[in-house]
Image 1 (tube, one colour):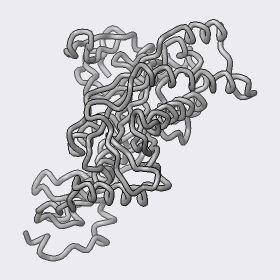
Image 2: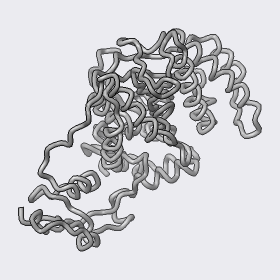
Image 3: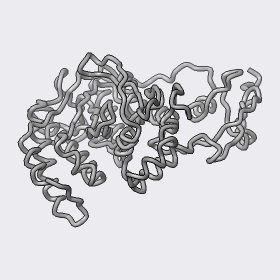
Length: 387
């Protein structure tokens, strides 16, 4: 690819500099899988298939997707399906947004022990939130919510943190009553920061003793520096409705370190890309990194194998979500805070609506295009195809 070409993609950068990058960097198994998936996604290497419009019969040749969760081309459909499921579970209450961040002094330790310390981050956050939620001074009830792991900053730097979306209330111990939090805040962020720090550092010291823990240079000094720091929990103003929660989550759930739309150009062996400068009111600007450094920074955000970066806790936990969700709805109904949801008025057939979250629309008529081998197996009422 020409260095001056405009609108390059992440795959173009990976392909162009692969040989040079591998001369000085060794990829882990997961990084190798991500690298290969991103460079082969929607190319002849993965093969292709023919898509057929269910309405007008138009045919389109398509290459297969890699479906790797780090690929910038494969996240949209998964995000839509996930958000549709969450929309059905959102309670008619306010939601808080909290952000728990690990100090930069721990970066090298975390990078070398990703699975262990990402997991510890989730557990420490859930412990902290549950401790304050069950305290009658703050709530005195079972909390519920979800957390999403992000590991990057705008410039692809390593910045592990959890975005926590927390219902502004909880179920009483007998699960018969919905107890509301304060209307403007969940708990003291200063107090939560101290508990979060204490829990994480206490468990980290235990993990260090395990034989599979990978130590790093100057580890004791890094731990001492971390102990001396003040940890910060960020709290955003609560969302006013479940609709706003769902819209917000769409910006975070299936995001990767950088999207193709942010890459501007490759020039003089540097990658130019867009960032939001939060020190300047979030205004957009273009920065650049040497191509090999750009690749290194991206790959440090590849997650461990089978690691779940979205997790639920409290009455939203997977094992009890259905049961506890019904209890919460009943409790809110008794409070007069919930009405039975109305089905949206639409003339769209449910099969079409379901398929639209997986497949792209036809550019000729706007209906859904599905793989040709599926077309004969999807039996739609005749009036759909005649409409």
